[in-house]
Image (cartoon, rainbow, N blue to C red; front, side, top):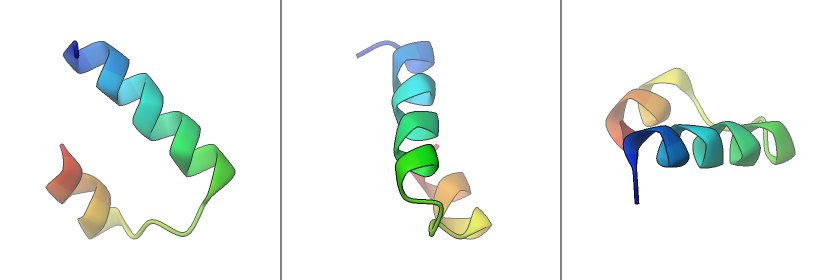
Length: 29
């Protein structure tokens, strides 16, 4: 999976579930 694709997917999940804390997003990346 490309980095941009992963970024888009992450944003999609964030839009569906805006419950991810900032630290979690940073760890995901």
